[in-house]
Amino acid sequence: MSELDDVVAALAASRKYKTLAPELLRRVARRALRGGGGRNEVVKRAKGRLHQLYSAFIAPPELERVEKLVAALPPAPDEATLRATCREVLKRHTSTRERSEPDARFYAEIWKTTGPPRRVVDLGCGLHPFALPWMGLARDCEYVALDVDARIVAPIATLLRAMRQRGSATAIDLLTDEADDDAALRAPADVAFALKLLPTLERQRTDASLQLLRTLRADHVVLSFPSTSLGGRDKGMDASYRQFLEGLLQRLAPAPLAAVEVASAREPTWVVSLAGVNRRP
Image (cartoon, rainbow, N blue to C red; front, side):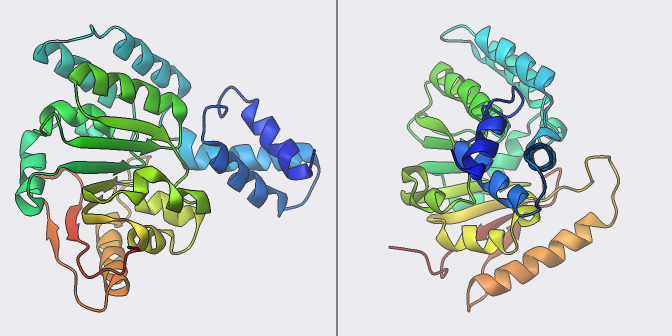
């Protein structure tokens, strides 16, 4: 067994990280090895990195609560039961907690810009798919949920079945070379959600956002950014992310890209048309 395989095996044996996409464990382990040191030091460094990238957003007890809530759903829940369960689930993840009372106007405003979608890809979805009861999507609209944690995508798959919503939920690391060839990303989409995703990607790799958007086969992407830090502080984040988005769009295409700010959003959100971006055929 190579040194890399040994570190990956140690991460995969951890109760906290064993359900993360194998590609993510391998990528983080490879980076941790560059810092040198003994095996235990490398594993500790890798676990610290995984905590920064993932565990800070949802604690294991909250994830267990999500699993219990979804397991309690009847096979064909009525609308009131479905929405009550989804509200409780959305409270469990730091990224969706401020959207735990979803606003149908938010999605209606997005579809007004994009048109009613036939295929939606939710990148780094977390628990956002539990807002589906408020999205107003047709049941034959394909909803593809992608996240790094198999334990998160499992209850999402259950939700899709309970709602009779066409779609799938898959664990994938968006920053591996293999992700670019994943069937879920190869197929064209009308809309891609990337809610609070880009800052997390940029912390892992410089220009990761640019690379992802250049290869994404979507007509529109919905981008949002956190308005405060995990600790609740503002720190001028709104102005900073607006500047980041402006620079990103300028680099994406030679011609200006249309970016419509979503007025009803609770966090800075834009719908960006990717027309004119050089994407693979």
